[in-house]
Length: 390
Image (cartoon, rainbow, N blue to C red; front, side, top):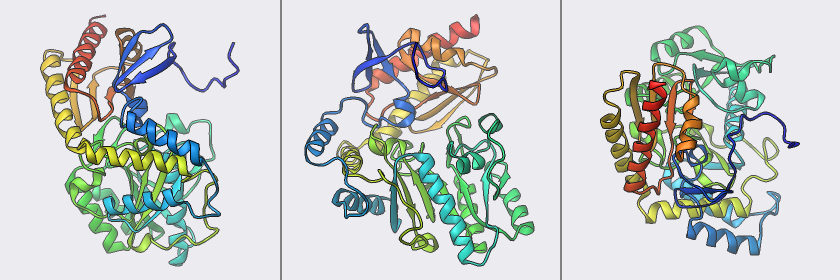
């Protein structure tokens, strides 16, 4: 009997090794990875350039402290700033830590403006993390239940509803920022339109609010742009990153620009492990491979191929109510809860998951081949047909 805390409903499989988009279990059985560790393994498994770079870095230096300069951290900050147009970068270890930093920064920004009780507008069905503050910002009661009292200071509105945000603006003088996901991953692969993002930028400019974007799942090339909000051509003030940034090595980042830059001063915020040489080497290598191998355009073309094949293979299933997504962030919505599809998929040799109870989510590595993508769709179609027939 394991001494692990029982807070995950784990599948009955343990993987021993992987190569590209393939994983192998203790019995040597092969699986096709359509989940990428939940949008984490950007370069798949055992990528030779990542393995080599990490091996070299481990032999030199794994961790020191942010008390000292870390050259790899400075190089990574410069690279992220160049890709995003942002000014400053704070490094941490995860998405919830990146969002936590954004929330703290917004509150300090508000206090510096003379707002005693700064508030942040957040969206229904959002997911920002599991710390108390990010949990409170999250729009999912199932995730929040049992952890009350929640942290105050959040005003919730329907996702992508400019009119609701305008109404809050007219009635709540304490608002200092808006936090949203360009594509709600845990919420069921729902994308904000370009028009909404442009309108939100205008509202924030008019009100002198910070526009804060959670790109933890949809960032780092997954939608065919480095960051999903770039599809709308907008600039943001704060951006949270993690997941795919390190291709499996934990690393998160909170980027700032404009009025948000310079808010934090020494002692205001920090992280023991954040931005250590190993994590930053993983991120630098990930970004370099993505550029060299043109993985952003690959995400776009492969995403279109997968969605087209899904439409073709699932066209006659009336229980499939929608197939949506952007790049390699894809959701197949059914008219019923479908959690059992995860185990059925595993039995058939594919890794997928279900979010929002009835949306099958695909988040494959950006290095997936055409043949693997076709195999993923064909296997999933067989699994879904059997599930719906049963």
